Length: 240
Image (cartoon, rainbow, N blue to C red; front, side, top):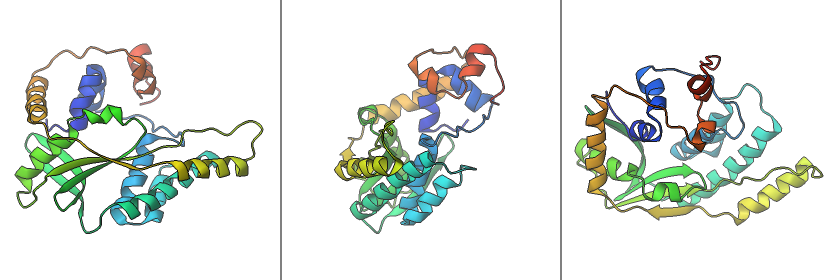
């Protein structure tokens, strides 16, 4: 198996989820929630890659058969934040650089000069400050692209505005309040130091997974966000 950062992090979260995804290759019905983190993230990445806000909005919309007021609310956020990102991000870099090796695969979001960037549409900054992701990307990128020298590795955190429309609030009033929150929000660039230990630990985890036979479930509060929850806990297969 060729491993990736998300592959190993999924196993660390729950071995059973890892088996469903990477061994059994079980695909599930997509989550159609307007705030689907995957679709929002893809919209953000597409807009940045193409340097085109509309391309990002079109990417997000392409995953829905029906556009509701909730979708429009998120598109307002996506449009505003994309405009902001494109003003802040330095130009002239290389987007979506593929890293493909016998034991590792990944995509670097953006490299400009000697700086590597990874884009996150999230408020959970603390979850990424100790993440090995950028260290892995820097290490393996140096192998496949020795022409690129990375000195700094940074996450770009684009905040989400998680507010809801009040019962006594019109959609116009809500979107005006949403706009106020967006204007007060701040995109943050956070540098994460390179860690050789992260690379060593990752490669050790890959070797372990090559020979693992047991996949116990790890029940935590995160189960509620897992698309395999009904299958794992109750044996229901309607979502497959």
